[in-house]
Image 1 (cartoon, rainbow, N blue to C red):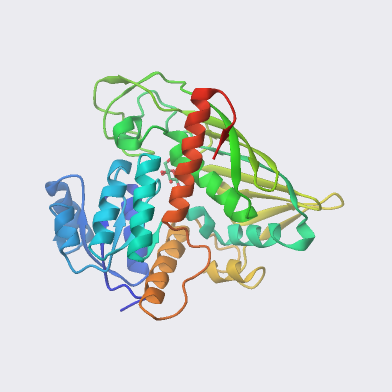
Image 2 (image 1 turned 90 degrees about the vertical axis):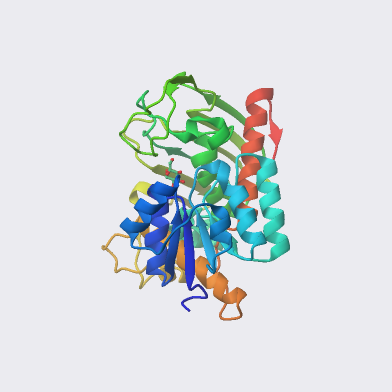
Length: 378
Ligand code: SOE
């Protein structure tokens, strides 16, 4: 029994399912099986992964003896699968977003609360060690209270008019595409780092490519969607202005059509004495601005905050990246399961379904503001 988890099932075998699988194996779990998009795909992936079970459906998964399930499917399956697993006594690691509507997220969070099982969501960028250093610095006395929180999350994998996938279909992906998919990461990190909560916002969204081929091409895939052209009804880009519960102003630009931006989450917090910038595409460094001098803090297991050191697996200069964020997230989720079973403490900074619900509340306010053209309360 490693970290409280012996056997897990992976639901979904796309890019992120593969990332979860590797992280689960590294955290010491046995991946008992996989449920992919069809029985034959499940068999093909099970053979490639060398796992015993190619599950036929969710009922086979929840009837099995796995301790936990990793939900890495298209968004519309997240909540039905999470609820089925929790009701069957399985701990759940569920990809964001927590469903395709605010009601979905409320239902899932309520079942998680009632069952008391471990329920986590990979707002994975919290698990860059430098993000932990960022939080420690921003929360420190010498940083000074934030007077501005701003930034962007820009990608370009939807720039090609032929790029498509299940996210383009609001039934499968939900009513918000760019903001629901990556704006949720930005807002989660901004709130988690500062401890402040977005309480009202005004939003504007845009669709630059009005039609795309329908189809199931994976995210970041160079393959074009293979189906007929469909009208696009979910946003390519979203901009928000917001106020927090401490009265701090902020803004974020979210887009998946920013040529040359591959996965560039940029968060700047400007405080009374210092500023700080986290750039996910350069996640080994943290810029700390000052009026007399500015410095660059380098990730290093020998320096910095306890949490930065705890999540630093490699020496300074040996870059940790996206995959290590998931290794840290899965290991911490399993440690929370061990604590649930009475061994050890649950780690700090672990995003749960409550954070998934939070993201759904902010996304709902964004959608309401896009319609009302007015400031909306979160
Ligand atoms: C696609 O936009 C995606 O894979 C998101 O779904 C992830 O949450 C993000 O971390 C990277 O980009």
